[in-house]
Image (cartoon, rainbow, N blue to C red; front, side, top):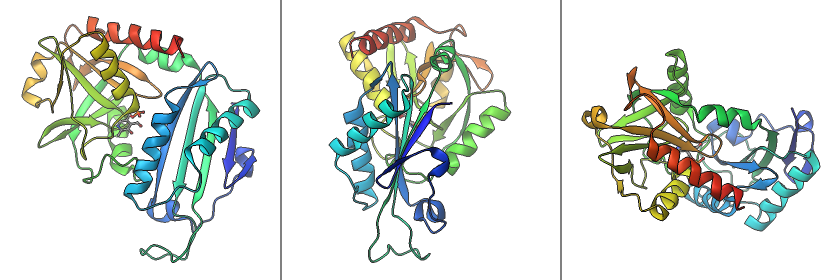
Length: 281
Ligand SMILES: Cc1ncc(COP(=O)(O)O)c(C=O)c1O
């Protein structure tokens, strides 16, 4: 599969990209990341992703080693060098390599990785047919707004879902349904689109924001609140969003069909509007 890497100032093949065993990303998960989709040679919402990377880094007191314009330049260069038209850029910045102690090193050089990998559009198009989800307790920390590389609860949630024949795990917090292992959650209830509000309980997804913009443009009523588990039987449609899957309808949650168990009309309308937006890039 086509791919290419930029690591600490150097373009190289993935197998030549080496990171120290003392890297704090490896030892402590002391770093943040981003994932940006590339459609037909164009990056989707690059500025929004880079702004979020800067916000995430700022929240862990880590200064990015490059400006947003420089990082965008690296993404374009990697794409051109690799010849990839459809793919994902993964970027990660950590507090660098230093002797292992929890305290921040007195001085350090952040480790900065950008990797582009080709992705067959068939993968996200298949997810448009619908996927299944399970519910599980939201046992994550209190700063889910930071796109941190500490993803153990998310990894365990998605693996648990997979073992139960589902694609995604939806987190239930005492406040209500927050989001999923690697996506935001939306429900349609009495004709209104319901999704969790921004704050420390969710990652503010770029695709979530895009869906909210599309919904506003289509005059769809939106409620930013946590859906309650008791409301689930009343939900007529549900879907998840993230940059790689875009909008994936939920056909069933915990084995119970959502609505009629097929992608609903609000979800299909939003998918149509998303395609029009992508087409206009
Ligand atoms: C926990 C979590 N929530 C939401 C999202 C969706 O974010 P985005 O739409 O920016 O890809 C992700 C994406 O990876 C995620 O990991």
